[in-house]
Amino acid sequence: MDMRDIERINDLYHKSKAEGLTPEEKEEQARLRRAYIDAIKNNLRGTLDNTKILNPDGSVIDVKSRHEARMRKKGH
Image 1 (cartoon, rainbow, N blue to C red):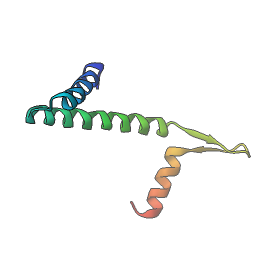
Image 2: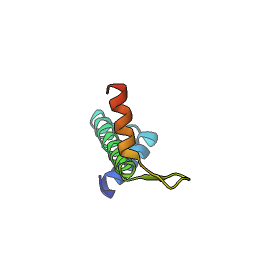
Image 3: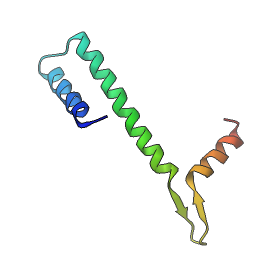
Image 4: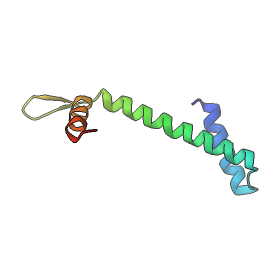
C-alpha cells in the first residue's frame, strides 16, 4: 500500500459523499480498503511479534512466544 492508494481511497470517499460512485468504483473502493486493513494488521502483527515485556522481577516475556504457547494450550 503506497500513498497513491491511500489518496485514491480518500478520493473515492469524497466522491461517494458528493455524487456517488459507479459500481466499478465501489468495487475498487472495497478492494483498496481491504488492502489497507490487511496492511495495518500485518504491521501490527510484526510489531507485536517483536515486543518484549519486562516484568518487575527482571524477567522478560516474549509476546510472540507467549501467544503461541497459549494457542497450543487451547488446541488452535
